[in-house]
Length: 524
Image 1 (cartoon, rainbow, N blue to C red):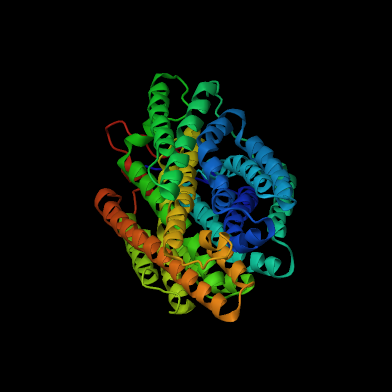
Image 2 (cartoon, one colour):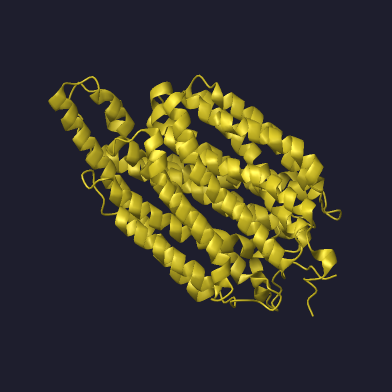
């Protein structure tokens, strides 16, 4: 019989206070994403980046998080997860200060890159520590739900806090949010968080670290350039090189006694499906969020503060569905709960796919709220399924893979869908002779160029630019609808977890006899 309810396994006050500390980096990273998207028009005016530079400012952060997550998750298992978390917090705070005072696009891109590398230490460390601190399956489920909720709260607070800061301060002020949060983590972490490391872990294989980066980054770059410029020899070449090095990386992991990536985790069908679904859902969310925030400001004419307030319904919908989903999963199969949410997200994307520059912001806000409401079940249950399928000593690797899917999906969404939206805009906007070329690159450039034109000329340019941008939103939303509905079918068909496993841990039901990694062992 399971001993999950035995007193020695239950977390005490220190663990719950430690959970509050672990929520800080989660809160920060989710605020950072939403704040930056709101700040895009202001960064465009302040630093005058090109369209390509603007995309790199947005997505270099997610790219490097995705590239370093596997390495950092494994490194935390070796040197200590608390130690890595605190090192990353200090580095993130310093990189945030560099972003605050960036004086050009290149400087800001470099600062965002440093934030991405530091951020890669935070998320797998927090999830791995949660797995270690909460051995009881039910308590662990609650702790992960709290962790997910804080991510949702950050999304809710980001637009409002960031909008207020952009209303009264310069664009660099939005990066100041990371400094006090990281300082608090550095003070409270050593007092409340225990240290965990895998004493039997071997040495970190530096060749595998290099191969992982050499595989992930060229693939991302190649896909981004294909979406932005089309199929050319350079992006195709980098894509092929990245895929080839990815194969070399996987083959090397199979030969190492202490691999950087434990391929045994992928023997679980549920683990694989949850990762793929997280990747696709975050890909859609990244591209949609970027486009919607710009639509509200540049097409709807809202200030940053007003745009932030209009985004609150979506954020609160995500919070509600993320909190309710574990309770629903106790009664219905988790796969059905997640699939229902993905179907709802698909409906929201369909609503967005019919919006135009004259339909008003109500339709966009409604569609976006449905998109976010549908994402809550996957975030809440998918994360628990992924990290719950690993042994305690594999928690860092499992958490890193979960976060890799999430961050890589978000970065690819911004890069691919963002580039696709830019391409649609450029092909559809009608820029009169004599108007700066920036008007044909981005909607923000068109809005700025219109300020120097006469009334009729400005109105004509803005009408064309806004219609072209709305067409980009329609295409992105249509792709999002297809991916969301396809993911709903995939989850419902493949994942067979019962409503409640015998020990209360849904991941435990996916411990097949074919060698898949079993659920976390918390026996006395």
